[in-house]
Length: 109
Image (tube, rainbow, N blue to C red; front, side, top):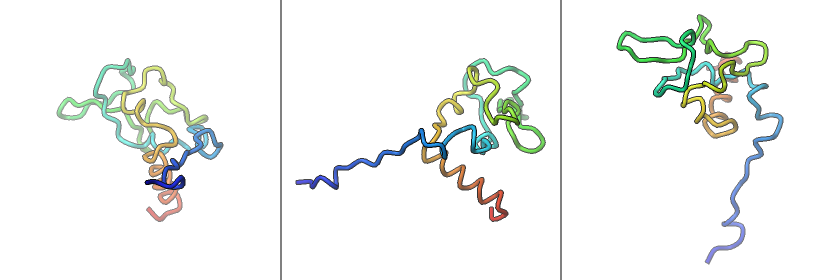
């Protein structure tokens, strides 16, 4: 038999102001993003590697070319790649990337 405490499911409040795409400086937008299906990503944001694989173009500083540098929001949101669609704000992966980015910025990564 289970007691009440063991059946409690922790809930993460993703509406909290500390978990928002607009305030994290889009550290996920520094990751390599493979384009695995056609979602309408404009060609100017696509890089093709030597084997013909397509990724989101990253600028010289490593940031995705589709990120608005003033708002850190995606300029092609409606046509973003599937990988970006699946990367959920506030998820464990998101929080891990934020933590790694904080270490990098602090010079510890």
